[in-house]
Image (cartoon, rainbow, N blue to C red; front, side, top):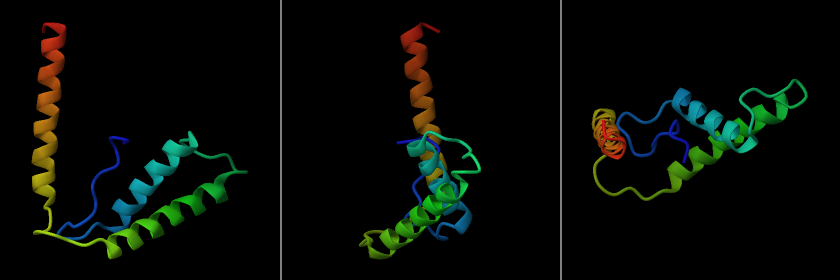
Length: 96
């Protein structure tokens, strides 16, 4: 998965429209291979982003939820731990 796409489901407060749009944009960029579409492809690119957002919202509404909502602070802490682990592995691998 693209590292820029983050977990958005089951947060308190819920994911914002901006977060959904940013993730949809990253997804469409990844699968299309374009960071910015040409004028000829712009409408299709934007429709794809909207459809991904709609599908994501529908998915979120249909998923069964178990346990308490996630917090952004906890997700940030987990990401920091993963980054530190990755950095330690790289240092060990390269002898630094």
